[in-house]
Image 1 (cartoon, rainbow, N blue to C red):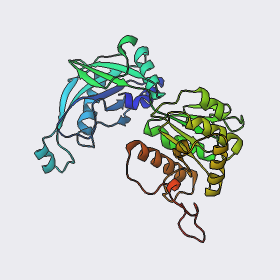
Image 2 (cartoon, rainbow, N blue to C red):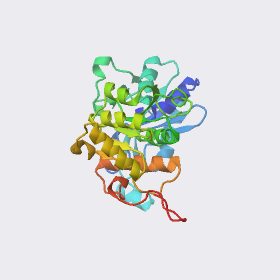
Image 3 (cartoon, one colour):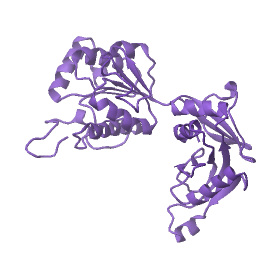
Image 4 (cartoon, helix red, strand yellow):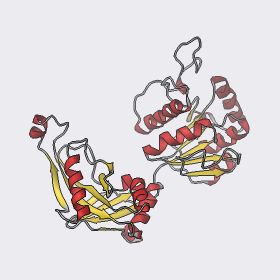
Length: 334
């Protein structure tokens, strides 16, 4: 349920009741984890999914029944592996699910949904027997894995990893849009008031007007977080990268041509950055997917962030190759 918190909260804010079907347990093969949810708004709209499509119709009916106030709140959905293959489905297995109704007037539950939608720690408890939903006391809401504890499904979400985007430029809004669905809490920071606006970055969680180097030195950056420097201005780039490389960030990348990268690395050395720290810098930023537009470049960047986080084999990173970033005479661009 916490994985669709933003959509749920928007529906509740508009005054709608929502029937939510949440996975309480997985038996055998299934594509979604415990805590995954599908919701039906009282106007008929559907949010989320609990499988790869195998049992969505059953879940839909269960959510509608909950909204009507009838039907069983907890049940098992799914097919055996053999029956699933005969039916042409991608997976077998069973899901124990529980249906509940979320009301606009339920302030404690909505507060947890709001926190989850902002990428903050959040917690909800669902009683499987009757589908009742509550927000646990703060002492019981410490980050922990979502799990079925007896008859109570404890939904827990730890704070989301951060993505700090330095530079309110044309690429930053596209990167915020690409990164937010991946679960990042997105911050855009720039010292220029005309550029650092929420209107220009609708998918950022926050837009900060500050000198990026000072902001990065003062804010908390953890080992799951990423920092992308997109400014193309040395007065911003150098202090920001110096500060970024002194953090525990899992990923630090900087945009620019190979000439810009070479000059920037020399300036970073002059600023006291050692070779071991420089080796962490992904510059030029991104994976070579032939990106040209801001949206395509954002895909290139998030692909590299994900590849680093998963330690995955991927197409060559631009920081590990040579040659022009943008081919000429109609050839493929990078």
